Image (cartoon, rainbow, N blue to C red; front, side):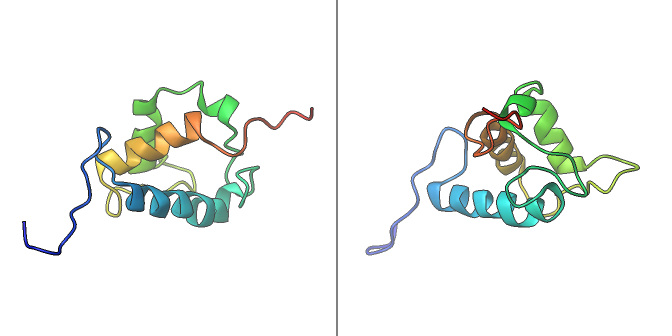
Length: 104
């Protein structure tokens, strides 16, 4: 390692904290352009946590990477690594700001 150059610590999920912040911004900004800025839906369906829990992380990561043929959902494989797609999938299932569409 070069003196004075800090290296990001590797994480078990393969995505460093700075990139996680960037991915969360991507989710709520870029994905939000179709799914709604708060993920409550728009051109694309709502993505509340309780709905995302019904999908495996692998299934969600696959959708993120490859899109849904015949729909407006594009694949993001050219812009996201497998680890990044998996991080987004886990985030949607566990840390998603939108817990449910149900009113309390």
